[in-house]
Image (cartoon, rainbow, N blue to C red; front, side, top):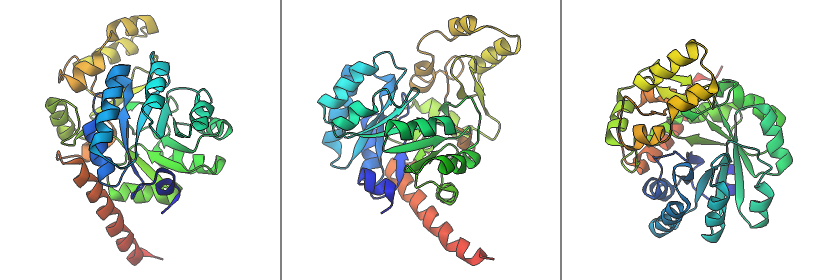
Amino acid sequence: MNHITSLFQVRYPIVQAGLIWCSGWELDSAVSNAGGLGLIGSGSMYPDVLRQHIRKCKAATDKPFGVNLPLIYPQAEDHIKVIVDEGVKIVFTSAGNPAKYSSFFKERGITVVHVIANTKFARKCEEAGVDAIVAEGFEAGGHNGIEETTTMTLIPMVRQVTTLPLIAAGGIGTGRAMLAAFALGAEGVQIGSRFVASEESSAHPEFKRKVLEAKDGDTSLTLKKIIPVRLIKNKFYQEVKAMEDRGAGREEIYEHLGHGRAKKGMFEGDLEEGELEIGQVSGLIREVMPAGEIVAEIVRDFNLTIGRLGDWAI
């Protein structure tokens, strides 16, 4: 066991990211049953829906699982009440100040992990007393850091400024990438895009198909004047890019974004008008698989790569 497997009491240091519209109880329980750590993506759920997913997840697995909580979510405090009431023991916070709720959770025996994209917030995490950090590089899907620092650069930089257990995220979808993250100083990985293309993911089948078709260069970081998000290039993306290129302000972009754009794309399957959030690693994903098989394949690839590297020593 390393620090991450010990902290979460799981077999493998593999975390399935809390993916909005894609990671409900079916995906989370499947990953946890396979030896990883599944996370319910609460950012796309009303509090009563989150409660239902937590209860169904508890019925589907006796293994550890957690909830991802975006702190900017308008009903974050209602979600916190649900998390505490339902006895969830692991919470990953993101999109906000790690000090805001870390003490509250830890006083109630809840393990707290915070997602960051720069060394400044890595230090803030240590000051806040979180139990571990997810350092997410520019390659990642969904909402991303404004610094646009790649995973390969970010992980060793964060490792230099904190001794907290470190989980790498962004561009990781194979055991080879997991081993590279470990070489850079991580002790675990958080994987999102690969699990979007799983049988248990609640992503719309058309969105999954679009992920499988993606090639290098098919995603881009956009909406930088609001909250940067990596999207597959489609009609909506092209509209936003044109607005940004001509210098449109935040209010105009907000108005065009409207409400429910991510749900429309990822959950309802509107491939033209919806937000299609996915990472650059989508260019490597070519098959929808059961989540448990994805975990097993990553572990096999990790171990096989270690064996091959032994022959390359200089």
